[in-house]
Image (cartoon, rainbow, N blue to C red):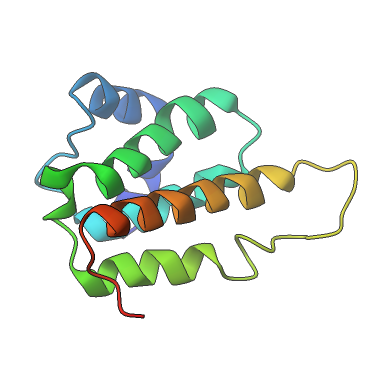
Length: 125
C-alpha cells in the first residue's frame, strides 16, 4: 500500500502515465491508486495537483475503456470519499489558506463521476 501512496505522489511517475495517454500500469491496483491520488488535491504544487493528478483521475473516471477497470461499487466509493469532510468540506470556512484546493478539485472529481454516469448510468439512486 505504501508503494501506491509513494507512486501517487511521484511527479515523474505521474508524468509517465500522462505521456502514455493516461494509462495506469497494469501492475498497480487501479482503485487504490485512484484513491491515493485524491490526497494530491491538497498540494500547493500546481503541476502535481492540476496537470498530473487531476488529468489521471478525470481520465480514469470519464474514459470508456478506463471505466471498465472500476466496479460500480468502487465508483460509488470514490464519490463518497469526495463528498466527505476531508475532501469537499475540508477546512470549510477558512480564509487565507490553501485548503480551497482540496475542496475545489474534489468537486471537479464529483462532476466527472456524475458526467460519466450520465453517459453510462451505473450509480444507484
